[in-house]
Image (cartoon, rainbow, N blue to C red; front, side, top):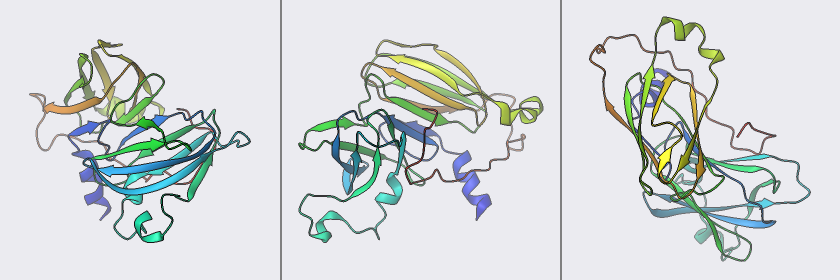
Length: 241
């Protein structure tokens, strides 16, 4: 089972900030105090609701929400709980902290978040100033990079070799600024499993698509050994977002 899971992770071909799957996450700061309602969507269709509190007295700087877990068919939905629009809190975060949306399985997840007044304050399908999109690319190959809302395009080259394998635990996260008209770098070179974080400046939806194997790649070429664990689903202390 573990080997099959690793292969699924390794062969993920598309990472979309507006349709999250494994190994990708969107991070947003909610500065308004009060209960927030999260509408979880799968491929554009609402499938679940949950809530979290932004509390001025909280010291929690990162709150993680697993969209795949929230959308699980066995989870009690608001329609069945009789709560009539008042969703229970699934955690608390400081106004200076961040909420991290990710999916431990599947793909195509997005969220719309409403504040205590019922006003939509965040839609993960359209990121904006201050948001972050983080992704981990595993397969050593080329990827196309695009901001589908703006005009920015680029390319990512992911490599893996013996030298990278020796220092894989020391790889530092790569940060790339995103504006509607361009990326901070239109050609990004990464090592397999190295973290990549896009810092959003202006309306954005980031799509990364596996392009094609390099000519010297073969089916039996050496691939990195992937050890992956599901991110925590409970509130944790300060993250490095």
